[in-house]
Length: 292
Image 1 (cartoon, rainbow, N blue to C red):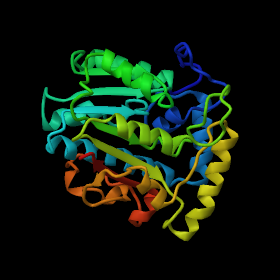
Image 2 (cartoon, one colour):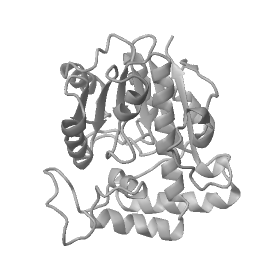
Image 3 (spheres, rainbow, N blue to C red):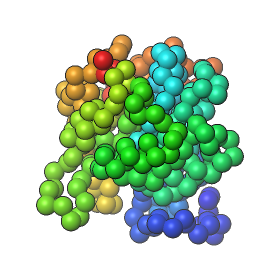
Image 4 (cartoon, rainbow, N blue to C red):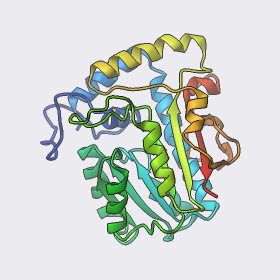
C-alpha cells in the first residue's frame, strides 16, 4: 500500500473518510498497512514534529521488553488490547523468543485493518491453538472478556498479562447513543483489573504532558488539536493519573518511568536505539504491575 494507485480495496468496515490512529501509528513505525488519508495526516505531523517517529518506535520497543520480562517471570498468556497493526513484531513473536511454543496470545482491536492483518499474520506464522485476533471494543469489558474466553486460546481463570500499550491516551468516549460524555478510561481499566485472575499483570504506556522538556508542551497542544480535529480525540494524563490506572496492583521495578528506561537490559542486539536526546523526550510513561 505504498501508492494510492496500488492500494487494494479496504476490508469491510474500514472508514476511509478520516485517518485511523492504528494506521497512523503503523506509518510512524515504517509499516505499509495504511491508506493515503493516514499517510497525509502522519506526514503533516512528522513535518512539524519529526521526533514522533522515534517516540513511536521507543514505545513499540517497550512492548517488546515488557513481553520478554513478563515471560521470564512465568507469564504464559497475554491479552493485547488495542494491539494495532502487526508492525515491528507482535507479542507472540517476542514471547516465543523466550519460551518457544509455550505462550498464548489474544490480540484485540477495534480497527478492522489491524484485525485483518493480525489474522493474516497468524495464519501464516502463528498457531491457531495458541494465537487469536478479535475484532472487539474495549469499552465493553464484560462482553469482550466473554469473547476472549470463547476462543479457547486464553484461560481467564489463570494469570494473564493484560497489555494496554498506547491505547488509553486515545479518549475512550461512550457510544453515540450513551447519555454519558466523559472519558471512560479509568473506569474501564478498573473493570479490567477486577476481571483479571490473581497473579496477573497489567502493562500500560501512556502519553503525558507532565515532566517533558519545556519545548515539547506546544507540540503536544498542536498534536491534540490535530487528532481531535480528525475525529480521534486524545487525552494526556499526569504521572499521578497514569499511576492510578494500576489501582492497588503492586508496581514492579522500576515503577512508572519513560519508555526507554523500562528494563533496558531486556533489549536484544537487533533492537534499534531511537534517536532521543534524553529519556523524557519519549513523552510516554510506561510500567507494569501485578495483581496479588
